[in-house]
Length: 401
Image (cartoon, rainbow, N blue to C red):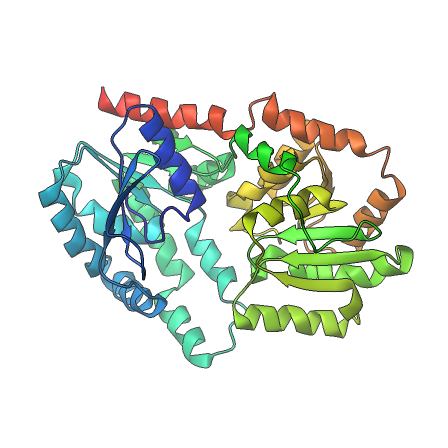
């Protein structure tokens, strides 16, 4: 497996690698070496080989620019050549679109190439940089991270690779509709969570963020223009008029431009006392925050990016037995409505977000069945990694035969 990110921090890569290792496959993850990390180590049966020295955001940015123009990441290319001299590689599993061109150059060295698309990358580029203030960065992104160019790359490599992994059915349909990619070579392996994750909610870990006398509306995750946090913040203006004890907790971080934008929206709506920017919290505390919140929200804006991916935290929240409120992004809405596992509001609609929160406040007891439905969907009805990973194992078994 090849990933331009830190391992084992990337949840999707880690779960896939460990699932394969647990089923007798020899897995080598090749990724950049960050400061203080070991060059080689074994983690839960997975061999990790880190390349380069002290990888930084700046270095990555330079390689990204070169790759966007020439379809090759020289840092990965030359280091992969070393890997192939050191190891016998049967299959090259490439994580996400930016490394597709580089890894395709090794097609004759392996039995099979797998392109694992974590998201709709070209469309993601339209949203990731929306709130960037630096004119230099905006110009750089418009030239080198241009969504139209990356859409052409997506079509090119989806046609070249014989095996493609998509994160949701919506992404598979999009590739077939837009590029006529053969559905038979696409496989959906989603961002489900292990059932064992539920133990985090039973651990009775302490948290010092949410008081029991507060009607808590909690978001956990990264901050960005596509996350819909602006909708939630603006909605608090109406919510606190109906629910004086309501408070929005934003657990996580974003870059300085994103956080400045969100704080300006908070100020514009005069809800500074009802919105708390919590920042990062230890993992054990985050689980306690999620389970002890009145409502957990995933308020993503609906667009071609968010409609073609799904966050791990959806399934984590479903195990927390806390009420779930999601936007109408296609995958979120599909899962929640399938199991009647929470509430859905119209994406980007501030008034509808407020209405659904107030509805939850007014009907707390009568809506409790939704939390049970959510829990059972994961623990008893197959919406978990144990079930999902079987598809990955079967895929590799078929490729090997």
